[in-house]
Image (cartoon, rainbow, N blue to C red):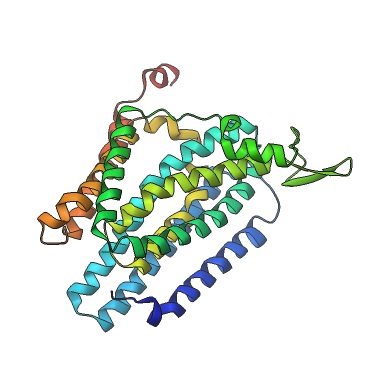
Length: 323
């Protein structure tokens, strides 16, 4: 391991502190008041988040170049970039869920950024837990094989059953929560909880947030093992995962109105999951222990680009009729 926790724990703390500082500036300065995020604003913020991720990737590469052989530094840089790309591409599936959840609960666009902000905070906590567990469990060949099979199965399921099912009222945890605390059907500004008749009630904003957190935990079952298939370095897994998640809100507002245009994207995401699963159960061993990261990056980027281009070149028939 190139970045053992015992020697690089300050790096984890510094990176986390930097992330929290940027998020605090994001919400406390640029989004202090609730407002509808425009396409222009979302594009600018998407560029900012991608730029910060690439800047961190460059800095990590430069550090590795100064402390490790050149080929190892190159490997580290490519592993971060590939992990970031995988998480970023799988995050598109989250956007479909975001659109459905906000529509289901009738969340106005001016409140969606705040809900996504809190959702990102929760996602960072859960991802850190998953990555910490994964760094221990992924040392066992049986666990690697298990998660490889899970990824392949998830990819096959996504390929043949792309439709997203959404019925929060049937979610077990949400049903239990409703028994524990009453939920108002009305919005009360941007409040997650409100006191009515001397009794605390959760608002639809909190229920939407709760459902988003539950959805992210499910997505993490695929995304975290997928990045561990590309690198065995927990620090790279953690930082690439977090960098991708940070830009998820901006990407949502940029793509929310166009998700239907990417109707073939799920095939690309499905093939990415299947490919990564095959790396875990077969390709790594067949390649002498590590499938070349350059090939992984090329295959993943190629599948993602091909599915996006195919979607744009072959729009749904009802889109063609309305254009």
